[in-house]
Image (cartoon, rainbow, N blue to C red):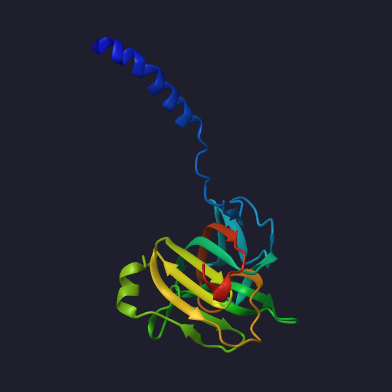
Length: 225
């Protein structure tokens, strides 16, 4: 009797297994688009004397002589709302770099204007993941406490950074530590623009950038994502 029950149940179990196997799997999350192919500066423009590709990284600056002025390698495309991820490390005597976003080149100048996700340090401590307003208001717009930031940053090593820009809201993380949650209140500030990799003018330094990727987002209400 037990064997008969098993035989009667087995086809039903098999049918259920096959049906489950044919169900559609959940869709993967949207893919990130590579902004740097790891081999060339395709899709970017800037001074080739200060930006080069080595070992799968974009290297900004040099360790042989001082950097005469701020320089930027700018994306040829502009972006509005996005989730930007990249890795960076800073070496040398100079201690300042950063990644511009929602920015543009200043006509007739080497500068860019717009938001910058800062990298390095200043007189008050570390600036990794701080939000600076380059060539516009010329000040930090948001910053975390220094002690937890110092625990999160790998000085001289690779650090993972994330910039999430949705409407007027900008959030930044360094190695998963939240550094910035800023909402823009000035309606004249552009909420779209180019991305730029900076090396700051000053003592010899190199900032290495790699794994630069972006996911464009549809604008949401009040900058929420």
